[in-house]
Image (cartoon, rainbow, N blue to C red; front, side, top):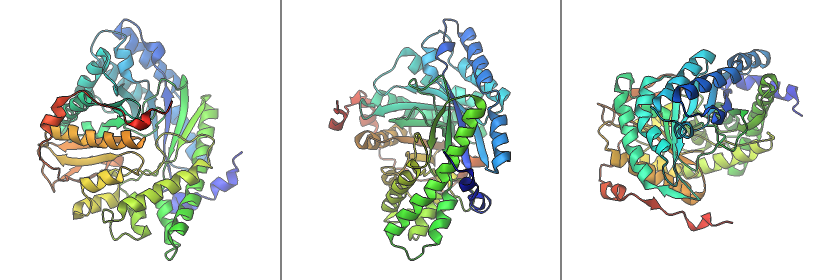
Length: 451
């Protein structure tokens, strides 16, 4: 039982330290919407989402008013749409347009799930959907897409990796007139979780209920403030402080999740206790690492500090919620984090350093602007490297890079809002082309044989 008075003690955190609930995400299964006729399937998709999520935004706003807890986003995730495409003939983009109409009707920020799971190979529906992603993202505003290309159990589908290098580049070209926003709404995963409430990678896994409520918390500013009170503490003190703070943050998320579940009549799924930064000053994961004692994020010691942070967040948060899931830890999206942006601009933070950090963070190479003339093969190789880290370490990793069409290293690309903006970062141009074009699969590592 949650003691509401304990939660309300965090009001100072909300007012002064940027504490918020980053998202309430309703997961909706669309498996019962599939039929042989595409138009009928699209109509069923629209009808089910608008029926199930009709009161999602209203309920989130109601909880905000009653408890004084900011809930930044109200979102929906759906069954990977490639499964629906496999069940009917036609243009996959029609499903994206149906999702867009539903998003506008119910007033959510995003719908995630224009997705495919191809870690071991493609179905015709998978390939059709993946090739349609650039067009789908160009013709919609609220749709997010993801593709899972590898897992610890299956290995890495390098044919999918090569294709995703092309798709990411095409998505940037297709949205060049919109600031290359397309790739900012596209994530390439290894070991994708089925209950992730955070965009752009959210989708409703096939093992999930028909409808479920998942909540993603935030609060980097709260953790930084707590650490500022122990300037002379050793690293054990730092870990203990982060654990205690994470517990308080997650209890607030549990309260919101339970209230949303009760009021909407939908089962509570999980709380994702990831620290999700924003471009706002005082809401940065990088600044937490600097509060630990780093002169600037990106210097030697950054990966060790992030490992401590990620582990302490999990240890503190897991005791505060009945069900923890999603990604849970600390995000390091460059354009969405004021400290990361500053480190990238100064040259302290490189893609190579970020890749090392992804071995211990929540997810991976996230929201990184790269030169617009970066080849699809180099993008694919970045994806392959990151997938290998996830596969071998049995963790979720992902890539969300944005080729900034017409821009070079040092130029700025701005998306606005939570997506932020930042400098175009340098990428090695030494060619991995032959390796990428070999295709096939990288076999699963020996630790996959756990049965």
